[in-house]
Length: 212
Image (tube, rainbow, N blue to C red; front, side):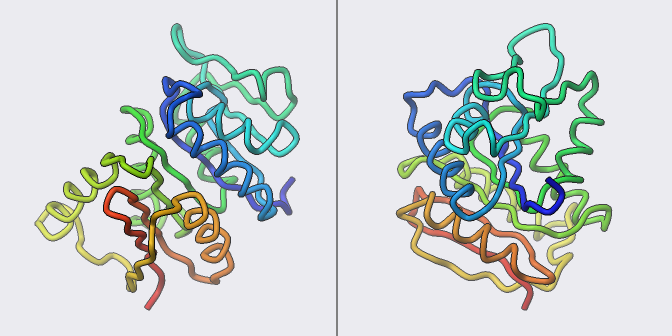
């Protein structure tokens, strides 16, 4: 599978299949496969299971973590040879970073935020390639909008370098998060020095960051 592009999808393991975020993840997984990507998730339920339901078993990898609670392989990837079980978070995260060509983040808890900030830290410090990061939410959601309020407050302060990359910010209509997100992962993945992209649909905006 080394010649196949892959997108890593992070998000809550607790999201019910009926919730809009899960339906969004399922459609996103389907569209990523249509754009010739495979999907990598943590192998659990919720957003992860929804994304793999959309992508299908044959187009999915699961990087599961052994925990005393909550985390078990979803029914799509369970028993598949592309399901890998890890004892430690650090080895699991290493494989997320090593094998992916883009990240897609959905609303989630501490784990989702940890994985997102880990990806940003590795890119900022030159320990990982700069690749697209797309943030997706339900059409009326405010998860990433709240996160964006946090980010600029620190980005322009003394704690985070305000412009570690030469970036140009481009905005699109975000009323269709799946279409915007999937097409942007695909198009940004073609750039030789691609950068980060951001999606927030609460205010009907889509922001793509690319090299200036």
